[in-house]
Length: 350
Image (cartoon, rainbow, N blue to C red; front, side, top):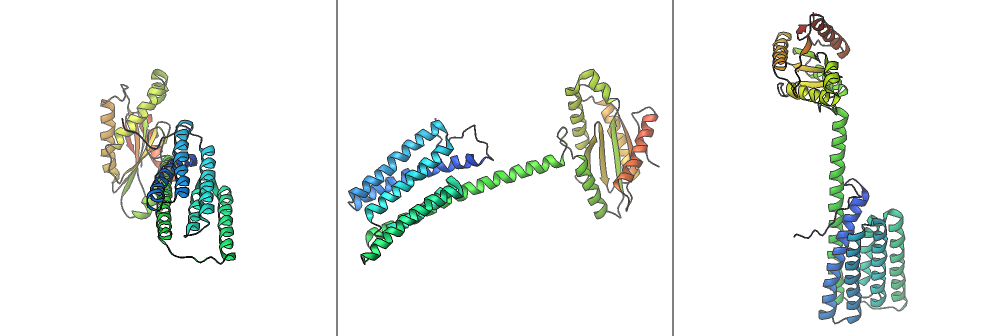
């Protein structure tokens, strides 16, 4: 069975900040274990510095324990503080033992990016101020003693290790930020889609249709264009006889059937209740009538969700400088005429 290093907790959704903090905690703990494991080997075998190697060993054991505990508990808030305090104490111990020599004070720069992300501005500021005060004290102590700094092999190792840790930290942070932004964009797209579509049928809603009509009239004001209102006959009877659940499926199936038979340039929307409206650019009123008549015959012959239905429709032409309200009123009048003639008919507005 494949082991997943990053456990997803059901309490945290993808758009939740704690979801991403949990991801960073896992990554940071694993990074610390690997980093200090390497440092332990370097200081123990290459530099023969047993004191610092012991600190590095602590930097391996405690994060490993925190990692196991966090997988079981999922307590993000407590673990962020525990991780921040541990890293701060570990860096403090190393800086004090090394007395800030061999460019070891540069390790202090690794703490702010970690604590700011885990704890936010206030917590990050507290830990950053502390660690920089400590490095300031060590620097002042070296200045008072007029210490001479020689660039040694230890200095080179410190700079190289700090550079690697910085790169890894910011890679983790950037990856988390990109993932969060991607989820935010997906959520925004979903919300935008919900704002423009009818939740039941998935078609455009009235607001989006009004916007599409205005855009169409501006772009194609000199082209022929038709507008159609479609109404399912006696739909209340469908709800009363089969129930609203079946009625909703009929509405959805009806919308899908019409949507499958229109062009990409056409606009289909649910106008309200059992009424649908279609905008057909580059279509004369006669061509629109032929198309809608085909829809009427098809629907009359093909039951939706086992329910036989018919439709009535009103067709009208769209005229430049005319409002959508006026166009809808004219198509609605044609629809009313179709109903007066017994339904299951298509009428053209005069």
